[in-house]
Image 1 (cartoon, rainbow, N blue to C red):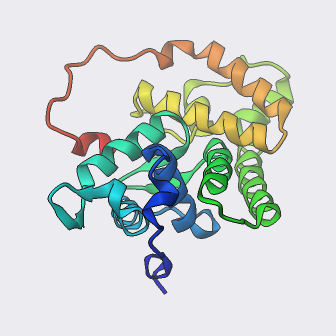
Image 2 (cartoon, rainbow, N blue to C red; image 1 turned 120 degrees about the horizontal axis):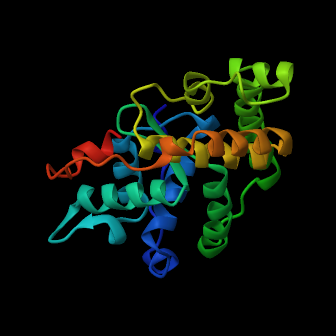
Length: 221
């Protein structure tokens, strides 16, 4: 069954004083069952269905304001609450789960915190395990230094390609750090920080012409 079909509209007085970003992160949390990526369209429809007075199109109460919702989830991604894009799908990050717990209190919702915390730690643990099995980390364990780790190894650890921009590298680094913190992998976190220092030149923004073609490019990056 489509998860959207299970969503119920909240009474306006329960969410009128809650910020849009909080409600967008909560929507992502509700829709991304088992931490599976969801689409931008699901966020648009889900946020509107649960919080219509916040996300309805002005003058057209039966329609969601997709421009406002797009702006909000992109802002939440910038703030490291959620991850992903319009192509790959959108997931919630550990920092986002923390915000959800605060939002649930404001909405007066009782959640299965123990189960959700276990689920979130499990996902972070899997991501940490992938890093532990990466070629770059294996080289580090063998030599106990960073000399043999090249740029390709570093980008692979960040789940990025050689074509990924500095913006994408920064975002991937921040997201990976969150998962390592959530899974208490201090040694991996220290290793990643050392790598970032070695390849710090990759994290500076390229001098490119500003994109002026609207929001579509941001949705897909």
